[in-house]
Image 1 (cartoon, helix red, strand yellow):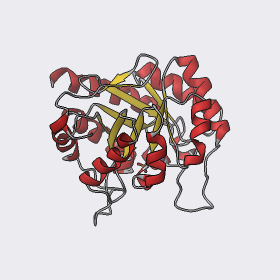
Image 2 (cartoon, rainbow, N blue to C red; image 1 turned 45 degrees about the vertical axis):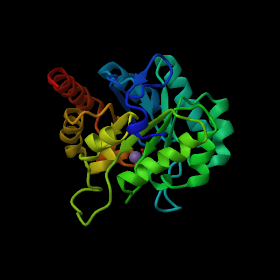
Image 3 (cartoon, rainbow, N blue to C red; image 1 turned 135 degrees about the vertical axis):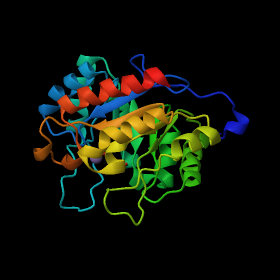
Image 4 (cartoon, helix red, strand yellow; image 1 turned 90 degrees about the horizontal axis):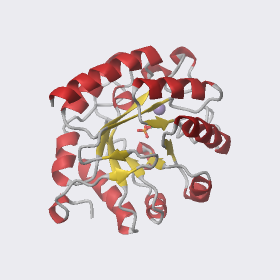
Length: 264
Ligand code: PEP
Ligand code: MN
């Protein structure tokens, strides 16, 4: 179902609040790694003003250590809901457990992110496949492109064809960056599939200084969108501060993304 051979036209996914992605519709998803509390609305206003069209923030966090901050849970979803409704933006937030499907439905979460660590959690993929929610599906930590496409197939085979693919870097022998950003994946996924392709230069690089250049490269390579972490005070962020842009940096990055978009 994800294969372009049987579906030559690009799929356009409707994310709500009038935001469509794919087939020429380019969108930027921005916000903090984790929802932390009152700073969310401040960050959300800044990313919207800079031109982001969807608000991200994790309420359920897949942390390496069980002792690290695990996210605010349902209260985090409520804070996202308030901010997104004030700004008329769809939310993008991670679902880690199929037992949370009903909560996500009740809180009208627009776009459900499946994180890299759950890219082959087949029961979760099947469960979100039974809904109509747009799913932002990330590539696994060491997942191949074909494994990503088969994960999309798990969702689509249950009836939900609203899948957005996300390249977020893969684990390699390289240690200077958090992950190795596989920019090839953008044109390869477009060749193999009709689904929209988003790039996440924040998790792909792991360092603030590399986020803008890789955001621009992914835009030039034809990504249908970007997911970028932004925090008002990165040194105090509860997760992923080392890769966050400040709102001022994000303003500049958005301006440069528009410049690239105007010449491709
Ligand atoms: C995230 O988007 O905050 C996240 C945890 O991403 P990934 O699953 O790509 O590591
Ligand atoms: Mn993160």
